[in-house]
Image (cartoon, rainbow, N blue to C red; front, side):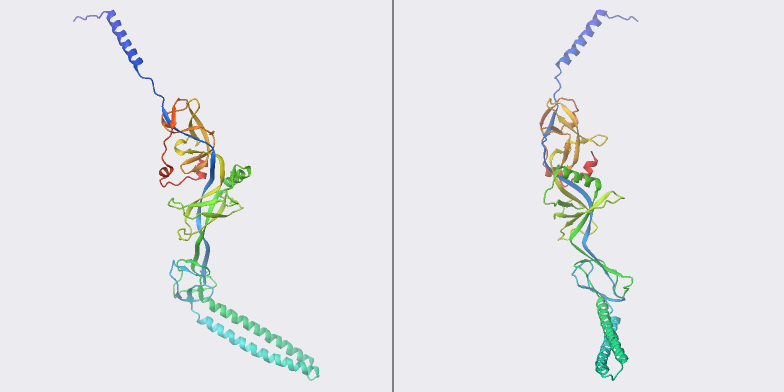
Length: 400
């Protein structure tokens, strides 16, 4: 077999042609385009300082209906779960033994009163006779002493009658408050005892209702320091605005009022209890419900609102935003957030007035890249919310 060799000059010429062709293609490629990002320009503004706290509802008044005399329950005179009035009879206990005891007390009183009349007459006669030395002084003193004992018997008899009337009245078991009665714990025919204070039912007043909230002592301390330093201003004459978020995420229609904050910190949990009062005309709130309360405690006049889509967090949980600086380059900024307001983060550190925060296209750029910034086209807040409940200030603080 014969192998023909290609001349060296032909190989060199072909290689040069390929190299020139490659260089020509490279020079003809279009230059890379500057990435475009959507930004929002932030300015300091007055933002309500809102704290969201968990809590549970409790009845405004709670009255346990218990037996105050011994006896057999004859009948129940209410419907479980119905509204009852103060003084309305709920149960009837057999009154026969107490009627008899009252009649006996009345008879004893009548006998004591009759004896007192006799002793009064005897003392009156002896008083005249002792003056004439017709009876001895000792007999007169004895008559006076017996008169005093008769008067004491009358007083004891009246007390026994009163006791009998009270016990007879206790056979009518009435509601001590106006409210809604719960489950009956006894049925007709049951034997109840005053010594054991047999629980018969419970009545609760549901309008208004209390909401007992739990706040960490650290958050309470920070709030007081912010108010003292002037960073936060109270929104009213000492009264904070309170709204309630129900278990389904909806906001309760009635605003509430703060009643008091406990002055003692729970040593086991490091928290204090805050009590709020809410109207409950429709009986929507029931005792024991888990709720969240948003307390508007003041106004931060130098905060920034940044859309949540423009804020990310690093592995340590530090909030970060990408900024377009004056040189149109991307810059990373660590932020200090203190909570949320709707669909925006509340930022109190890391931004300056007029900063351009990237909220669209941030996934296509990185710090140091030159970009073209345009105003961001964001969806309306109502559409973005779409029923989502806002995050709590405590959760936002912990995410920093």
